[in-house]
Amino acid sequence: MRTFHFEKEKYGFELQMDLHKFETNPNVFFEKSPHTTDFFEIFIFEKAKGGIDLNGHNLNIEENSLFFISPYQKKSCEINITNIKGFHLVFQNDFLSDFFNDKLFVYRLQYFYNSKHPQYLKLTKDEYYKTQFALNEIISEITDFQNDSLHIIRSLLYFYLSKLNRLFSKQYNLSHETQKISIVYKFKEELELNIRKFHSVEDYCNILNTNRQQLNKVIKKYFGCTSKEIIHFRLLQEIKMELRYSNKTISEIAIALNFSEANNLTRFFNRLEGTTPSYYRKKHQNDSHLP
Image (cartoon, rainbow, N blue to C red; front, side, top):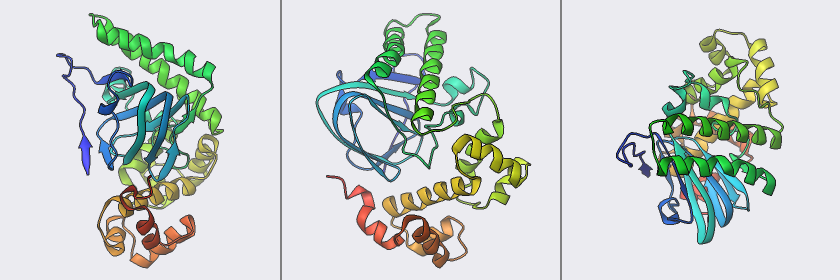
C-alpha cells in the first residue's frame, strides 16, 4: 500500500503544514487505490461529487462537507474532479504541539482518532463561509511568506481547528471541551499506541494510574459511552483494517492483535459487527465495494 510522506521543504523553507484549493490542481490530492499518509489531512469540499472510504466508512461527499484523516489511517477516493471546489489542508502534529507545548493537542480534537463516529462533518453554508476566512488567510500568508507568517499561520490554524471541533462535537452530541480532563486525551493517545497489545479497561487504568470508576466517569462525559465501548470500537476498527488491507489469515491477525486464539477474535468481531471476519473480508477487501 502506498504511503504519502510530508514534504517539509516544499517552499524552500521548512513548513510543517500546507494548504491548497482543489481548483488549482485536484489530481494531486485524490488516490483511488487504498493508501495512507504520515500527516493529518482535512478535505474541505464546498462543491464536489463522489465518495471516500475512510476507516471502514463509505462516505458520500456533499456540499460544505469535511473529512478528517489521521496519520496512517487507510482511505481510498472516488471523486469526480469536474467543477470541484474546496480546500486540502495538511499538517504534522509538531507544527502546533511544539509551539503550544501541548503534545496532546490533536487528541483534544474530537474528529481525529475517533473510532465511534465517522470522521465527517456537514456544515451549513453560513458555517462554511465563516470558517473559510481562516483558510484564505493561511493561503495568503504561505504565498507571501514573511518573518511573522509562521505565527499568523499557527494562530489561524489553531482557530480553525478549534472552531471545527465545536461544530463536530455539536453534530455528534459530544463534549467540545479541549482544556480540561487531560486524562481523556491521554487515554486517546494510549489507545492509539497500545490497541494492538491491550484490550481491557484495567490495562489502560494501569497505564494512566487511575481507577475504572474515575476513567469511566470522564470518558462517559466526553464521548457519551464507556471506556470499554471506546476500546472495543477502536479494536474493531483495527481488525477491519487488517481484513481489508492485509493478506494475513484470521489466526495471524489474532496473534498480531494479541487475542489468545482466532476463535476469540471471530466471536468478538461477530458480536460487534454482526458478521464473520471472513465474510467481511470477502465483501470489503481493498475497498472492492467502491463503484
